[in-house]
Length: 71
Image 1: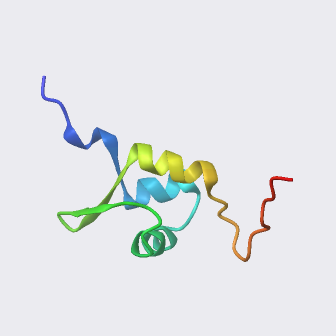
Image 2: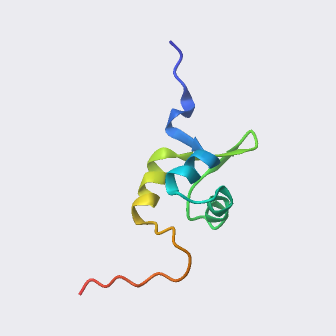
C-alpha cells in the first residue's frame, strides 16, 4: 500500500470551502501571510492543521471586527 504524502494538505478550493470563503479571498490571505501555504506544481497547498488553527480564530464577515476585551 502506497501512502499519499498530500493527505495532510488541502488545495485552495478545498480550504476555501472549509473556511466558507471564496478561493480568491483565501488567495489574498495567503499573500498577506495570514495562512501558510506552499506553491506546488502551480497549486497552493495548505497544511490541514494550520488551516484548523486559523479557522478557530477567523471571522469571515467583511468589515471591521469588534475588539475582544478580557475584562
